[in-house]
Image 1: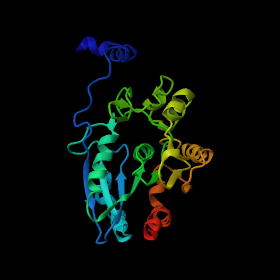
Image 2 (image 1 turned 60 degrees about the horizontal axis):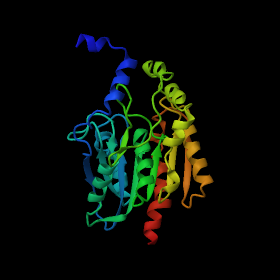
Image 3 (image 1 turned 180 degrees about the vertical axis):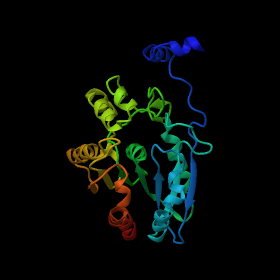
Length: 285
């Protein structure tokens, strides 16, 4: 064991690469879900996806007031944990988007839910997942991304050598952690680390989320002084991509003054968007 510990990090990464990718994490493809229902019929489904904190964040007491408001507004609400929750992968590492999607579709079979009306709401890495999934599955018909990214980034593991996400047996392309970014990451200057990683324009292009393929309205809420990653700048890139592709649905970007968590105090704007552009269309059906 001492000999292994003394191997330089660069050599360790080289050895791992030579041996191929490690085994998939335990409980790969498993998620934890908790469904909250109102009393109405044909309720549109809102799916809450947490971020790098892990667990089933939207099922916590912290979000009870917001969950209750969704129910009061006529929505069903599914809190979904995809890592760090009982029976799910321990780390955010090659999460199966198929597993997340299958779980959502299973819940949408509830007779009181309208399976044609599914919206994802996620924060930070959860916003990355929400945008990515909606770009892959056209049965998702609305996305709210809070402090989102425009591209896929690495797994939250020690070496950050894998993708955060998988579809089927393939890893989703991602912008890798670079040696230049490592010192900033080690100092917990995460925004700077992400900015350095994004200097790899070729990797960014390969890993960009194809948001123009999303089958419904999109709302982005970013933080102008985001200390975690440049969510406002990345949201602007998403807006430009939607515009250049003549995106046929409504799309909006709300820029909130403050840090990474500041947009969480702006749910009035989120409910207004959903009621105008998602629920309103349902009421008119």
